[in-house]
Image (cartoon, rainbow, N blue to C red; front, side, top):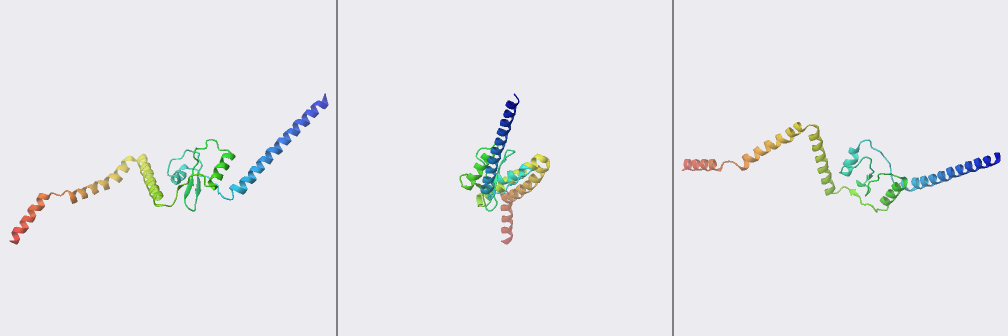
Length: 175
């Protein structure tokens, strides 16, 4: 009776050690692959607020999200489908696809990308100002537009009848 339990305990202990060894071996092999192939090509970072990532992506990203930025040419990669459950396999697959240029890159340093970035930054700044204090935003934008409209009106819509009478008076004095 005692030998049966000792054998069962030994077998359970052996299977536990074997499964731990196997999981350690798999983890070590994945980490070695990860370190050799992924970490040599990528730097990993984290940001506490989503504004920086939204500014780079020029859109509102869901929180938490993954974005890969190429700092040399300002291109960024976003997964096609948002990874709700981020596993090491999906992350490694995504990063390998970036290395193989299988994923579309966004952004860049071109004229259109800079124009889009300026438009996005302007609209987000104005929206933030409007949500923070709409009265002050109305004054800041409305007052210069009011003066500009008065200047344009006085330049292009002056009364032409007054100008023609002044011209006739000048001509009569010359004669």
